[in-house]
Image 1 (cartoon, rainbow, N blue to C red):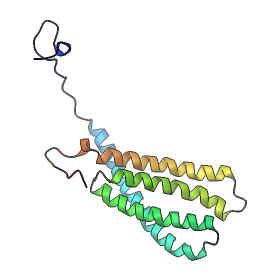
Image 2 (tube, rainbow, N blue to C red; image 1 turned 45 degrees about the horizontal axis):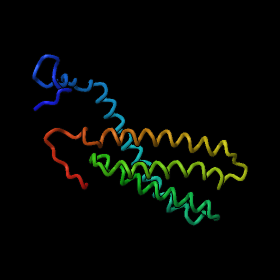
Image 3 (cartoon, rainbow, N blue to C red; image 1 turned 120 degrees about the vertical axis):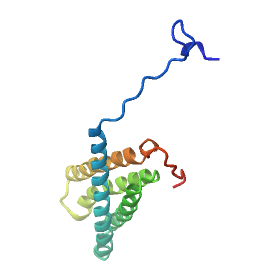
Image 4 (cartoon, rainbow, N blue to C red; image 1 turned 90 degrees about the horizontal axis):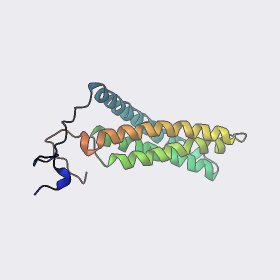
Length: 161
């Protein structure tokens, strides 16, 4: 039996949803460009983060400088792992990229305060704010390209991966 709210006025057939239009080609191209740029950015920050984290660790003198160098190394690891997950379009990539975004936002603002004795709060907030906007763009591209709705039809993906 069909609920009354789903019936057409005077008819006995359920109201059907109008056919959804496919996404315009421009949106798919934009999403693909965001996907590729995000992978590139994650790889670059990953490689540079690991190299600089290892090379700069002995030079970090204060605990704040150590936290910056540790953060650089951490966003290097998270960036490489996120790039692999995003390239494979795995759903576990989004939380990883969010963690990458938090660390990559923490590092520049803290570095201003740790390494520049005359650094201002304005410079620290500007550095972290600009980086946060970039991280949000990467997180958007990750979410847009790894959700269940972006997987090809007929392809069954393991939900645990």
